[in-house]
Length: 178
Image 1 (tube, helix red, strand yellow):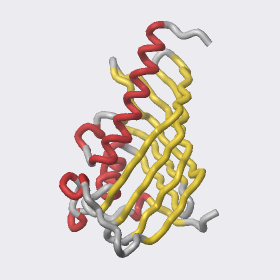
Image 2: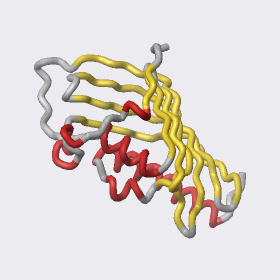
Image 3: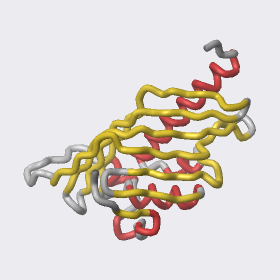
Image 4: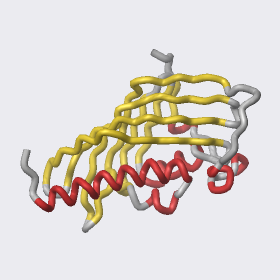
């Protein structure tokens, strides 16, 4: 497939958009996150025993602030993007995710992989995420060892304090793993 110079530039902008998404989740950077989504973003995350469904930037930011809070540690790596243009100002992408999530409040760790499928739109000169969803490929849960030592914890300083978190259950349904 041959791309125009504009499409090559757009590919880099879309890759950078998704990289910013992962970085901002892991660092609780809500200000920058708010710039990445359309007002009516659609979200559907299907995990091993959960499903997250929500609509709109405000719900997305609330969900992320509550999930990646000061009692959490997180790492998200997105690899191998496959970006396809569906129009001059629209594209779709598939990403392979590797992630790790530690909850100090629950004393547990979840790690795994997922396939993200996104829809992007250009608004003015800026690409935004209009729809994001994933299906877990691997999801492993384990309790934290008692002797674990956490030497660096960025979210403890920058994430929402647990006492200030609101209930995310309105966005979640729980299912049987499998």
